[in-house]
Image (tube, rainbow, N blue to C red; front, side):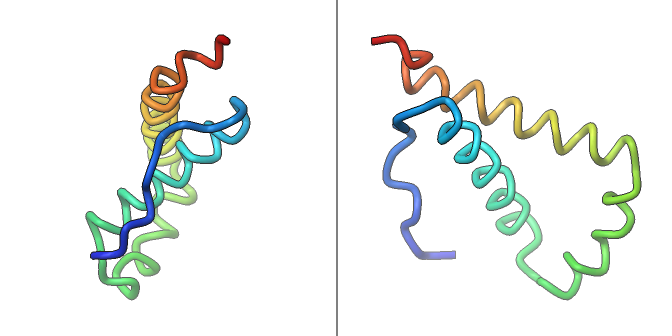
Length: 76
């Protein structure tokens, strides 16, 4: 992927920050597995797995921590 889509981690609100964290997580998966056919083939395995969903939630949480820190935890 060569497109520049992430120009800043700064968001106006925590909600936007959380949505950015989800986007970061999803993009990370696409970078790791760029073949969409393989990605779609694997999806049922983790979509119905408690461990897979917990791992995905953890990745989102880590990315949210990063975004929150970049935004000084939205303190003004």
